[in-house]
Picture 1 (cartoon, rainbow, N blue to C red):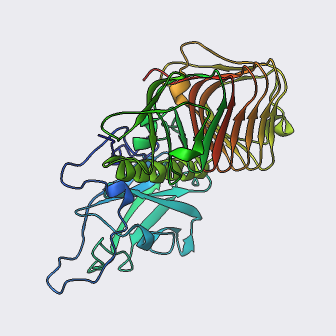
Picture 2 (cartoon, rainbow, N blue to C red):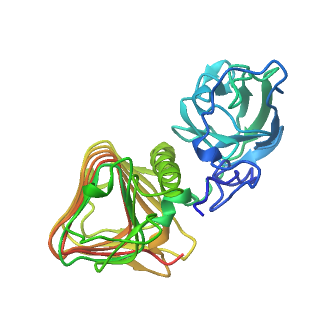
Length: 373
């Protein structure tokens, strides 16, 4: 069973409002996709906030904290936005992004909060349940920041994490590629998975390929595959938004060229493209996280490598790219790649991580290995 986004962590000193990894709610199947708007029943109950993070009057909240609220029922995702879930410093609204999944909405500020400052969060009556019933009253709480910056938490891939390759329009290969993990396309059909010589499973829910150690899924396969893939694509898009919304620790490093550098954990951001023309090293522990925000394209030169040291793990490295991603011939990449357009691995290129594309993934005799969890 594919999982949905989990509830937010309750840690006012950390990067609050992060989705917990792998969380599910047995009473609320597929809340991560819930925009269940409809005609409000006259007897339907208004939604209520059951918890908020930070807690009311919390002190010493981290400067890179997010703000979250958890509801007692599935909500209409479209009603949760920066106009209905607001964070304010005095009368001034703080810019940010709202993400909703599994009954929890997270407001992620676009930049770090000011130190030793009182902030007020408000969830208004414009917020509605999945049945279209608005909240009966505004929910407001306040907190005060400290001076500390918390280490970033991993981006929650939720059910998208069940795939080593997930694309919306196509997955193609020049054989032989070697893929360890499940792959899928949605809303495209199986005809968009090309040169894999697919063999249908008797269940009709997935296929097999000699190039894939795992299952191959498509939106036109038998239930429950279509619904599961719709959830996974939604979670992929939420993860992209989550990563893009993290407040940056470092901006414009190397003017968009990070070849030859050794990078510590943190959130790195570029308003342009990013080049990796020579080897790149990431050094940290098994719990450290790297998030790279790239506003344009990401290009890695042929024959180059990303290496991890000090216990750093590929599962904790995230590349959020608004343009295309191209990994050069025989190059080796590490981490989860989330591209708003296409991802291409040139001949002999390899990755330990995931390829999550909002258009297509193109492989050319490539090796793709799901990272250890």
